Image 1 (tube, one colour):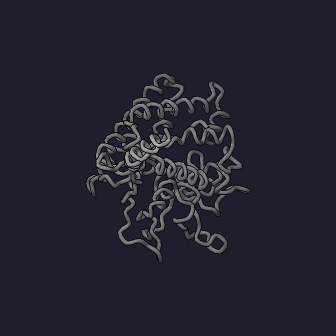
Image 2: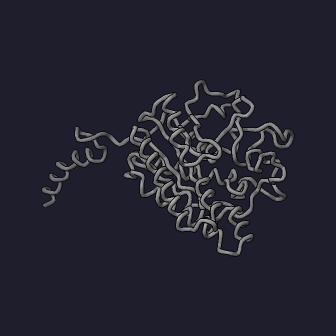
Length: 329
């Protein structure tokens, strides 16, 4: 019996080895996907704006300063990276809007098509703009995060428009986004799509809850977010090979309910918006020098009423990178 088992084992060894590596003429070896470009689509969660045309852009979060103790005006774009920066850096890819001297990269391959205030309907235009410059290829990594403004616009119609109709609107928006995700994925590019963070846990939602007694406004915002995200998830062709799904809504909800992530404050905007020159005030011109008393860019979850702090962006970046590295692209 022992000699028979040794014989079987010798016979099976090459077959098992072939199965493990996918070789021996019966498939292709398992390889790690390494993109040549990272292309960011969506809204201000993914935006860097080169406001001074010096490759040292500004972001919609708590912006880092080059020398915070001696210079409160000169930004450091590479500091406090937003989630798409965090992801791209892992693949040694930079964006032109954040390509500072003296270590600037020649011909950076990152592309930011995302725009502040973008809605789902704008994603098609962002895709078209990228195709016009350079079509998608199988070595592209495309990130997409959008839908916050669709949810907020729907919520603004309440109570003149009932929740059921708002849900119908957002389900249509989620499905439309899913169709655009599939459109990109079917070009051969790999797509990393993030769900919209729960709009029912933001500082804005907390303020709406306190200001209105007709219904629990925070819970309403949460339900609207859930229906949008559910429609998106049910529409994408999520077989794992083409699309990676980042569950930002579930992740940040868990932080609120169970703690974690190193956040000491998950309810208050850390930026002192009275110092913002934006209309309406926002984190776009917020820096580590314009925070509320006692505020911290990494331990507070929210930068302003809707957008993630530097710490929140880092957490989203880590979540996205984990999904990217573990997805069977």
